[in-house]
Image (cartoon, rainbow, N blue to C red; front, side, top):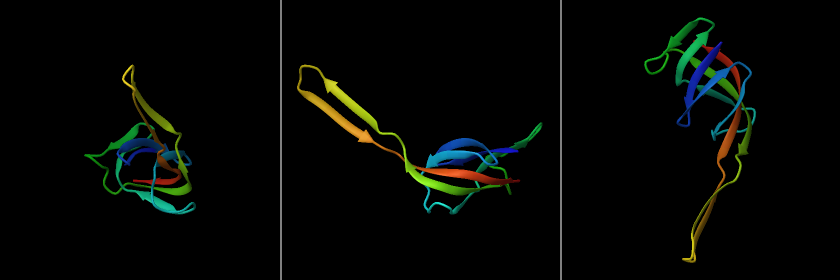
Length: 103
């Protein structure tokens, strides 16, 4: 069984025991998380598509760790004008393990 969930403005296709990295969620490692914004649930040939979400469906997960993504550098330089701009960014992420899909 698999599901498509929406969190952090993005959509993820998940199945039981998958470990995914999503945008930071509040909580500590070992905590439980529930995703109620389920867009699609399927198993084999039978698929339920929501309009926009599947009513009564939910995905539960366990927080594995709170991590950070890789460092990204935005660098702009205008040649011969002594002008440069450098900005770095690291995204806060949460690793979650999907424990069950119902619906």
